[in-house]
Length: 502
Image 1: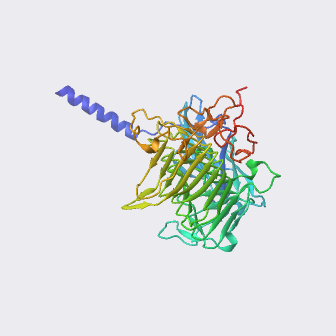
Image 2 (image 1 turned 120 degrees about the vertical axis):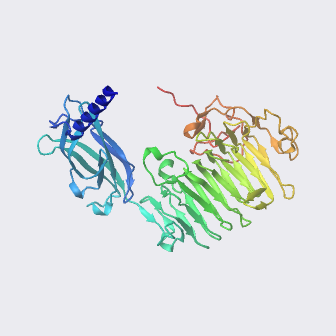
């Protein structure tokens, strides 16, 4: 017992002495710091929109515990960069300690107002430096970010802190390619008006934002008016407002382009719509052709690339791929004609229970069942494929018309469990005299170039979609390549020789 008491007293004495002891002394840095990089490139940001957070690691490779007398930004308190050094936020720091053979992190962010700079350029490089011990042992790491000017479209006021819908003014109905557009909330094209988007325009939506084309209104996004530019330069792109490479393929960054009931004569030509929740929503049509999609790409949407609710869509050279639910959902009836389209789903961001293509004459909206006549759902020279066995689903309500047809298509429908063996909607032998299926190919992999990267080209001589289509009058593919005058190819692309690794 006596020994136990003595041991306890000894421990308490040591703890008491330790608690009074000062930290080990450190020596000032001698200018021999090393860094994880000599320049930190912060990816492109829009004016007045904050960047992501980037990091720099600072190493003390010496055998001594050191302190860095000062760490500061070259522009001082006027800098648009912000630092967090070893857990402390600021722009100037003193006596930052680093143990021997240890390191610290510096985190860097920026927000730049292009109007604060003496420049008339629509984009410029904003630069600064992190300076270490600038008085005695100067070392620095450069900071560089590209800042883009933009046209911002946003509501005049917030509704309880939320972004809301607002009408575009007459002065806002022509979007040019001079600057990118950054959208906050849901600007609405008013009844009777047309929003015109010029070739080469770049539209960026903030989180929970999108675009509405209202009853009686029209959108014209034509990326192929003139012939003096490369198609990629003329293309119109709708995407999120985060420009860092990390966000280049992340779904669900913004809301939707919503073509509301009664909108009419909407045109999208040489357009890419990516990384939203629903790329394009097309509500009940007005009896006329509601939407024309020529040479359009939609991919990486968290729900659907296209959601039609009794819509009227004509699509030529359309690519739609990689969505969290059905890539293309045609519901509550309508009229649809898809010609030389590539519809796919190789979703890898979670479980997917929907097929690539859903065709239905009904839609359950909450407690309401919407039923409408499916006047036509025609698919010609179209690829419907993905990484599930059943990649198209037909859903018929017997109280409304249900007309559909697949001609010269490549379809993925591998009914391994024979659950649809006696379902007349999937009678693939019904090919004559108004039959729904004619000259199709089933369950033969199209051998895309790289489906995980949304590269859905097919290889010349090595794809079942090569030279198995039927002539339709569509003389060019989505890239402007001439289609064969004989048997043409299925899908949005003419088959080509794939690039090699050489």
